[in-house]
Image (cartoon, rainbow, N blue to C red):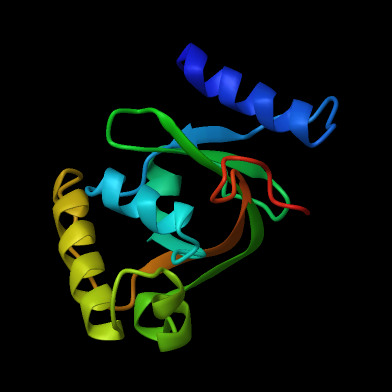
Length: 155
């Protein structure tokens, strides 16, 4: 973690008068980190999905409601803080159009194609193949910092 991430978190805690609160992780979304961070900043992206198998392979714990994460841009600079609202694991071919649209990237067809392409390439690194019924982790979140003026959003 870089120092800017910790300073960003410290600013959030100071402005929102939080003490003893910790963030779970700092990360960038997918292969278009700047664009996706901008969508979060604009409030257009309020959901994300990832392959469940990657959590298993990398021995990572699934996100949980109320956890905080720092979204990084393509230069690994902090862009926003999100708070997880809900987490659900479902087969990819059962992800609703409403959820796909909440990712803010385009219509359902675009969402499907982008995720199939991403998962296919990522799975190939493990000598695995994409399947339309692969399990995906569907997270809904809200952006809690900063708002358009660079100040916290009332919680």
